[in-house]
Length: 202
View (tube, rainbow, N blue to C red):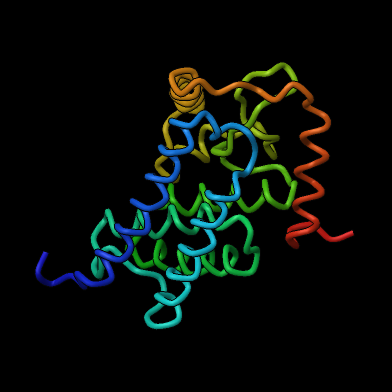
């Protein structure tokens, strides 16, 4: 890996580790599933600033620059930058260009597409974004054009939806995740947050 930019790669892996450590800490305290925790939000904001500095200097970090794990770390930071619409959309564009050059997996770009659509409260394309439904189950957020979904997923290297759904539900079960009791109220809160942050305009 001597040909890689080890400094940037180390930075990106460190950002991912900080994100995952805070997640595990909140999980251990039983506070992970109680909404967008301020401590988690603070990590996401700090990580986004660090990644934005990388983008300003050199553009989206590619596989040849930081390795596959570095690219995935940058993607995770971008995926979790939900409080910064402009930045997350910028990441989508830069990541898309890396995908076109064969420097990043298409599945990462597809997942970011769905995350942004969810933030905008619009139907997703690939069914990668899962959330609690009205019955208290972890299910895909609304999907645009269900017909052809599996073909779209296959084209970008995503596994069948049923497999992803099973794995996600099992992970949530093991972590002790519980659906919020008031589904409609939670959806209203998410919409209010999206408006406040700038994802949705009146």
